[in-house]
Image (cartoon, rainbow, N blue to C red):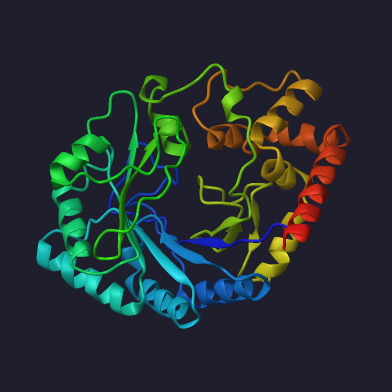
Length: 354
């Protein structure tokens, strides 16, 4: 059975920025937000069925929901769960403000800090904010401090640019093929510092507002034929209270990847329900490209883009296409048995290895 070991809490879909590439469609014009009782309930219910290693607080901009954020971090700290904050650093307008905010969050129990910056954040968040947050974090001892940077073919804010702007030779998390480097040893202060470099993805607002030339797209997508390591295992709680398969893109209301409302149903029951869905299992054990190929075979009239840049893009093109999902539901016999066999094989292997 697939179980979450990381939970991303999307505190709000409101944001201080409205980035053109945002995979969550966040912005100042949105208002959904979570309160602490709902967050605590979800964390506790999931942690009861399988220990959570990390709870990630993201958004939107999670610091806009300050009280619930701090309460949630403290709760995780009290029950032994590590925490990470993903932020655009809009709050780090001065070095002293950055220190004050991070000092409080560190005292609450925050263990990891991720700061997002790229060409699309820059019109809203000056890079100086990133420098302020980075410098302030280095005065404290976090488990990790990472700058998350998405780039396209013509990006100006690249890992090399970031290194020059902060004046440090920070290691990269991924190589040119997107393969994660072996994590370097922690710095002298005990903190892991890195730039999490990734390709810009054609998802949600980015798919609607940017052109294909802004992305690294491939016509040969065979290299994207891989299982999704995140489905269920890196679950997300949306700002509307839905338990989602992942935090890859906005999923509220999706027939496949939105498991239901945690405010009315125990989160453990929602995970059990998700594990009974053959499409979710197919994504987890074979990957979205596997499902796309099934759809093309059983329903050739369903159309897809000819180029993709990531597994997430393929997943979105399948799960957000009602005709594709209908075809999969109607022809489950075309792929269900092989998915169940793979699931049983993996379960047996895990049991023997335990």
